[in-house]
Length: 133
Image 1 (spheres, rainbow, N blue to C red):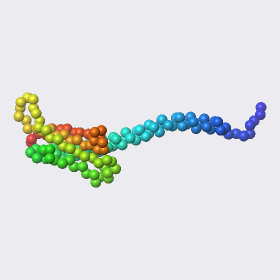
Image 2 (cartoon, rainbow, N blue to C red; image 1 turned 90 degrees about the vertical axis):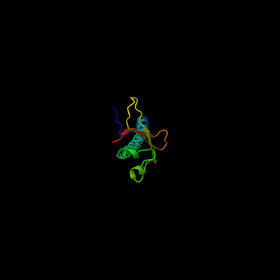
Image 3 (cartoon, rainbow, N blue to C red; image 1 turned 90 degrees about the horizontal axis):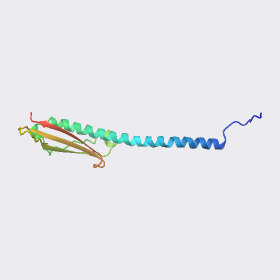
Image 4 (cartoon, rainbow, N blue to C red; image 1 turned 180 degrees about the vertical axis):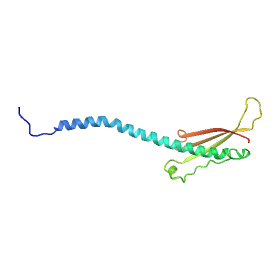
């Protein structure tokens, strides 16, 4: 038996190993890039939801007679976490509550919609009812 004193890998073995590694890693990198965009969208959505909740609580604590469609939605873009994302905008809609039972209930339906970036695709809305105290 003859022993080969030159231990090592041939060029073909190295090229095959690199090709197999590349075939395995390309889908993994694709998933990582996709997951980053999903995380970014979820983060923006969460910040919009927080803005909507903050505004909803402020409006719910107002006097019932002062709640109308003229209330501005406060979007504070001085927060450093918000500045790294597209501008948020908000809109409040106040509708009277219509009772199907015929009872006279003084109640309003509040809908806050916060949007960012492309408003057709990126928006959340929060809805609640407020009764006269």
